[in-house]
Length: 243
Figure 1: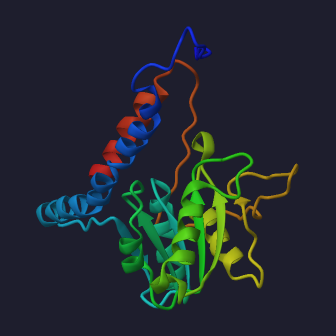
Figure 2: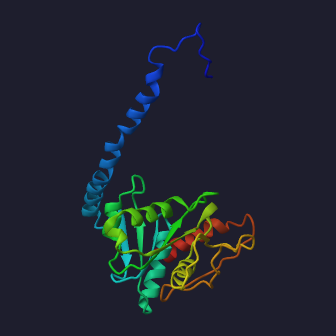
Figure 3: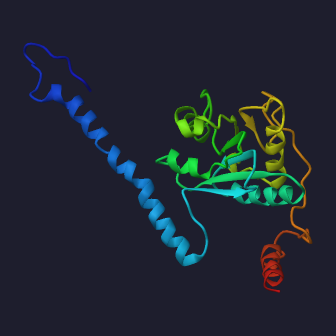
């Protein structure tokens, strides 16, 4: 607890310098954060060489001349990949940028990933920041396009949305709804995905699920409690996967 200073309790030696000292030392870590993207990029390249899988700070996937793209990170990128493959096989030109290093946020590497034809971007965050002007990834992307001369020339429309809270499923059909929203004359901003928001009406319309893989077979198993259903399904899936 801070105590009042009186003639009987003078300011301790060095007390006046503490805030300035802390502030200066706090800022001294900047150079270490600035160095992180290059270090991560170096080791991602090494992993790519050993595994044959491409890793980068920002990875682009989709049509080379895509005008509408989404930027997101995490497991939802797999659903987005399936949606993009399905849509592009049917004449669309969609793309996405998956983020693999979020902090520190490297605008230089984001610039390398953005396709030249990009005109509209939807940024998807898996979080809700009550009272803010947008979620963290969305705000970072907007700032990057606003204050970076090379990105500023592209001048795309940028909207943001939220998905996946409490592990809410994000499916290819939901991702298709994001692209359809981007195609509107005035795309909806600060939207939600995967729920029906009948309170603040921020959700995008729910779509029927689509089969994005040709020849896909679906099965539904029914079981009664304590009859070994979980173990039996695990074994069934293993047999199907192996054969």
